[in-house]
Image (cartoon, rainbow over the protein chains, first blue to last red):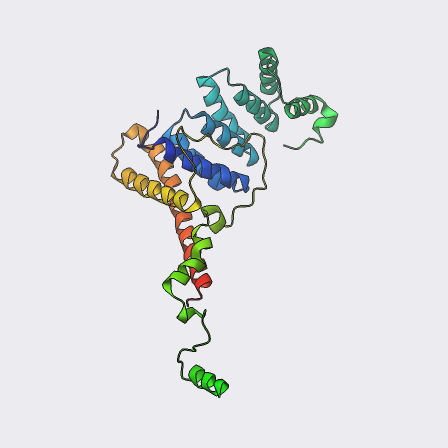
Length: 134
Length: 136
């Protein structure tokens, strides 16, 4: 539920600005806007997923994981949130949690993007993992 | 003789009949014509952040609400300014319960950043307008 009286259009205009700032690599201002939108509507899916992605870009996987867990508590079947959580777990070296998320993703039967699949395989391979960036 | 007339006029600070187009001889309409490309600039152009270079598979554009139609740059800027003014005033006046105070703080921080961007945008627009019109 939205608080502080923001209309759909106002919410959209700010989300759009956050997105465009992120496109420019201005992650911190984009995150400030998205944190504000998250305060306005803590359940908004776009805000949560984009903010989590930006936290990953800022090398803050723990922040991303907290946001994604919030999203998955609301909807455990949000496939994109789970894929992003897998990436966040890999970024923070949480092997057991990454393994758990991968198993859930595989069990869902949904098509995994090739990039994520290749990253997961590299994560599982110690030789490749050493070469893998965050 | 014409040359002497021009020199005399220039030295005395008078108007030069043949020098139409100089800043002091421009009509208000021609000023507006010169400013029209600037008036149509979006906030991205004004802040010079219209270079879309960062691509991340997880960061996509938000979906516009039903019935929202993107207007031109000027109407978009006006809509944003109006929305911001309205929200800042409403938040200042709002009495929120203690449970929402942390969320109110995050919204205030967001609005403060947007106001800062708005001021920068206005300053750049005003500066560019002065430069384009030739006014000192």
